[in-house]
Length: 196
Image (tube, rainbow, N blue to C red; front, side):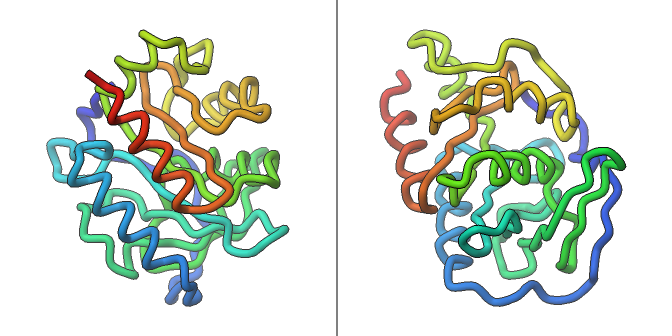
């Protein structure tokens, strides 16, 4: 589960290097990023990079979303986020706006927003306590382990996505899907409290 290597983006990025559009939800996303880092829900690797990613749907009815950048170190400033506008899965290209590369799980977030119109926030973390608890209580889990940031991982998650709001990516981490940002975050905190 723990990442020994530096986070690497495994797709091509077509990045328009400029400031992402202002959005009132950015403050909320920064709050949850700091909270998850403090609580170890998004721990750091040996390079000090935060393991996890948070996003929210940019506007109703669109698949575009704002997500944490790749390799951030829990600073969570406005430059820590990227707007992903679309994804070409066949050519493995992520189209984005921002000053940094988008998270290595951007293709996964895009697929979730495309498939689940009821979801407006996706939180992904690597808490070992949550993974251990999930196995004890049989939380929904992908069947097979797949490499992070890959289309194979996207396909594996899509197999069990249906109408669930919390799931485990086998030997990797969790996904919390919310109708809004606070719902996604509070669901993780509620499950973390049960971990003993």
